[in-house]
Each structure stands twice: as structure tokens, then as C-alpha cells.
Image (tube, rainbow over all chains, first blue to last red; front, top):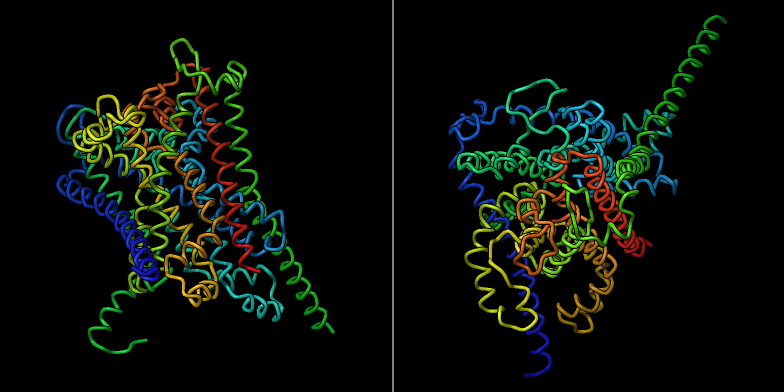
Length: 295
Length: 325
């Protein structure tokens, strides 16, 4: 075997290995999603959404407080976190670009995206739960908002970066104030991108459990009062999986299915908004069948 | 005359209003930027430090790090078991995830046909979007039983008698142990790692690769001798970034670690990590010292993950800077 063939063979072998690693990653994705589908679908029932939980050990019941609480906490966190995040992101992109200090702050914000989420729960517990004396839904929303804030700030900054400098300069040349440029030019151009960031941020916090464990805690009764402990899907799942009853496990599978599907749908939606070429493979196949050269 | 004066007046008004809005916007936006990048990280650290003060006074620093006893009843706390558990599960998951993530990045950037790239990218990114509690639930109900009945007995059978390595596979296989935890953790961090490495690979200018191809290099040689050396700091950054993520991972680990405050003697023994201890014991902490000790481990986790992520960020930035100029 010549040296050339050997090198070629080795190269092909290594590329085959890299193909296997990609297959390995996709294998886990399908296994997880597959078992979620099989188990989640089996136990899915309308009662899950509109019934309250039964006392422990008694079959039946649903997770109404958890669904309602989850929606309330996530929406409130979004309402608090999104404006703050967008404002910080605008400053980083529009004012801080030339300041070394603010660029460092931007990097720190980027680091905060990955800080352990459970610590946000611990921090908020010290500030908003212990002084009050009991767990409350509001503190859960604040913990999630704090978690969301860096994500939104960074994506907003990234999206504003994509707006061409010339557009801003054209507006300045017409005598526009900076706030006018931001409001009427930059934000308008980056609208879709910022929306994508918001959706990704919501997807991120919708699946969080750890920060809610010591803030909003759990509740077996439906409540709309933010001063009370409030159930959420994730904390309920956490308790049910660890619990001894079989129907608890079934309900947590169903809840897991609903939660994962909503989070995945959100992130797919964000991706489709951002690069519309996600559907490109489909067009490619269609083109190759019809033999037409499309744009 | 009157008209001119009026026009000048209203012009001045518009100007003052514009300038006021200008300043108002800059200050309010700037405050939130300052909050996100400086006040919030510092305040979070200070709150953790303040809450941990009791335990810091009581147990000191070195003693707390090295002491293996965690006894809430006698209020005698040392974090060595948790720190050990966190470090071991992170390192093991990195060992599994790193080669896979680099392989996926190579596949996406160099190998996959153009129409297939977004499919693999999206699939891997979806893996990152799955909430961590789902990994925990799936690992607990699906993976752990399989590990306990099939994989771990098989491993014991094959490797149990090998000297040194065999010791790692002692004990009854339960599926709730170091090995399963690290495996699930590795699946969770593959997407982050693969994304950073892929971005780094994409930054290599095509001309570098083309000149290597021009000299007759094979595809693997180009990857091995051009792409990887030139993106080394990006790859290292990606690895550290995902290690930082793995350190703070809570829910998946909580189901699978077994929450036993001991130094695990083998890969098949239950153990605990910092995040597991926080998730399980925080609401049960009935005394001030107990809660403070938990805040103390939380503070350690905060400092370590912040430093690691900072280093990772710095390394990735260095790579970006090199290619921009």
C-alpha cells in the first residue's frame, strides 16, 4: 500500500469517526424525544389541565395549579426581564461600543448567562423570601427574570450589531437625535432579531426548575396571589418523580411532554425567524426533483 | 416679527425637549447596562458572602474545603464530599463529551453537504434546548434502569478483574451513581461545546485551508494540522465554557447522583455535588449555621464557575481578535 493511499484511507477513517460522533449526538436526541413521546402521549389527558391534585396516594387528579402557576411566573418574569435586558443591550450596542469599560461589562454579562441557575434562587431567597417569612410566587418570577436578563441583553446587543453603520449615519445626517435614531432606525431594523432573542429567553426560563425550588416553592391549591407559594410544572415534576406513587410518575411524564414540546417549539420558532434558510433542505430536495433552478 | 420670535421659541422648545430625552435615555439605558454587567454580579456575590458569614467564621476556609463530614444534626459541616463530587462528575463528563463535540464540529464544518448542515446543527441545538429537568426525569426512569441491569453488570464482567481499573467498577450496580450522572451530564454539554468549536472552525480563513489542500494534504491532515492548531484557544475556551456549565448543572444531577454525602469509592457508588446538596437540603435547613453552610458552598460554586467562564471567554475572545485583524 503506497503512502498516498494510506494517508487517504486514514483521512477517510477519521472523517467516518466524525460522522459517527454526529450520529451519536442525534441518537441521544431521538432517544430522549422518543421516550418522551411514547410515555408522555400515553398519559396525556384533558383532566391533567383542569383538575386539582388529589391528596397523596389517591389516584387521579390533575396539575391545574402547576399549569396556571407556571404561566403566571413565566409571564411575569418575561415582563420584568425583557425590558431591562433590551435596555442594557441597546446601551452596549449603541453607546458602549467605544468604551472599554462597557465592553468589559458586556463580557461579564455574557458570563452571567452561564452562571448556575440554582444560585439565583439562593440569592433571591435571601432578599425576597426570608424577609417576608414565606415562599411566594413573586420571588420566583424575579429569580427567573434575573436569569433571563443577561440572555436578552446579549442577544439584543448581537442583533443591533448586525444593523449596518450606514443606516445610522444617514439618519444622523438628517439631523436626528440619538434617541430618534435608536427608536426609528436601529430598533426597527433589528425588530425580528430582538424578538428572536426574547423567544429564546422565554424558552430558557420556561424549563428552569432550580431557581424556583426555594422561591415560589410549590402549592397544591390553585392561587393567583403572588404573595403565596405558587406551583410550577417543573417543581411539581421534581416532587412527583421523587415520590412513591405510580400515577405521580405518569403525570410527570405527561407534564414533561407538554413542557418539552412547548420549549422546543419556541426555539424552533426563534430559529425559523432568525435564519429562514432552515427550510432550505426541503427546497433543495424539491428543486432536485423538479429539476428547476430556483433562487 | 412676532412669527419669527414664535418660531424661534418653539424651535428652542423642541431642542430642549430633544436634548432632555437624549440625556434621559442615555442615563436610563446606561443604568441597566451597569446593572446587568456590574451591579448584579457583584450584588449576587455579596449576598452569598453575607449569608455565608456564619459558616465562614465557624469553619474557616481550608478546613471547610478539606473536611469530609457533613452532619446537620451536630452542625458540623465540611464541603469536601460535594466539591469532590462536582469535580469528578465534571471531569468525567468532559472526557466523554470533548471528543464527541469536536467530532460533531468537524462533521458540520468540513464534511456534511450544504443542505444537511442546518439539520445536524438544529438537532444538536435542540439537544441544548431541552430543559435540564427532562434530562433528569429521562435519566431516572429510562437510562438508570438500563445502566443498572445491562450496562453496568457488563462493565463489571469485562473490566472488574483488570487491576486498577477494576477497582472503579466495584459495588452493586444501581444506575444511580457517578457513571450515569456523568453520562447524562456529557449529553447535556455536548451541544454547548460543539457550538463553540464549530464557530471557531468557521473562523479559519478558507485561504489557509486551500493552501494546505494545494500542497496535497488530505482532508484529515488539513483539519489536524491547520484547523485545529489555529483554533486551539477557541477549542480550549469551548471546553472550559462547558465545564463551567456542567459545574452548575442541578436538576439532571439531582435525580441521578443519589445524594449520599460520601466520597464515592467507585464509579458505581452514589455521591453528591454542590448543586445536589443545595437543591435537596436548602428548604430543610432549619438552623442558621446549616443554611449558612449551604450558602458557603453556593458561594464557592459561584466564584469557581465565574472564574472558569471568565477564562473561557478570554480564550475565545483572543481567537476572535486574531482573525479580525
